[in-house]
Amino acid sequence: MGKFKVLDHPLIQHKLSIIRNKDCGTREFREVVNEIAELMAYEVSRDMPLEDCVIETPIAKAKMKRLAGKKVVIVPILRAGLGMVDGILELIPAAKVGHVGMYRDEKTLKPVEYFVKMPDDLASREILIVDPMLATGGSSIMAVDALKKRGAVNIKFVCLVAAPEGVKALRQAHPDVDIFAAALDDHLNENGYIVPGLGDAGDRLFGTK
Ligand SMILES: O=P(O)(O)OC[C@H]1O[C@H](OP(=O)(O)OP(=O)(O)O)[C@H](O)[C@@H]1O
Ligand SMILES: O=c1cc[nH]c(=O)[nH]1
Ligand SMILES: [Mg+2]
Image 1: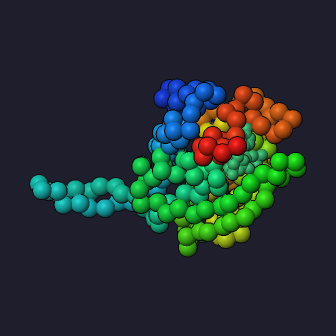
Image 2: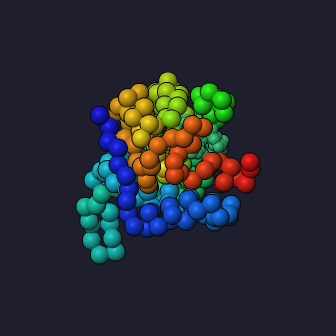
């Protein structure tokens, strides 16, 4: 079973309290979502594989370590996942970026896929699917399905706020996927929104309603 980890670093918790506030405006929301994503990327990348290498410094040859393997792929689930991409790219600037477009039908709460564009060689790459919200789990499960269908095997899911219902569903559907969240909230309300949550992440990021 993949792990589920809440990243409770004080800076992450502090910044999360800023964006949860209903009075946080679009500009600040966008900035702070990226800042949290950057901090999370530091933890999420902790077990990235390294390989030996020899570097010639101005003084001597030195046995060093560098990242091994192909470039990481960041996959935002559109739209809200886009808000986390730049923050992660600050730490992993050479990463490739794939996109999965999906929205949740307001009545059924089921995800509807409308776009997929991925880099090549998914099978040999580490993939970070990012979306601020893990609610029922429907969107994340469908995103992992879409990537596995295209050959992906090494997948992590990174979100800001998770509901227990979504964590359970994603782990059941894809037990091999590690899940990282900045917070595990209480429950989903009758409209499928996370409580206390932060509202509709996409609308708050892009100023839509
Ligand atoms: O776990 P789930 O129940 O599937 O809900 C979570 C999904 O809902 C939100 O997207 P939304 O459908 O609002 O699309 P948007 O990002 O375009 O606003 C959110 O960003 C997730 O993708
Ligand atoms: O609370 C929620 C649930 C789904 N999508 C959001 O943006 N927020
Ligand atoms: Mg939305």
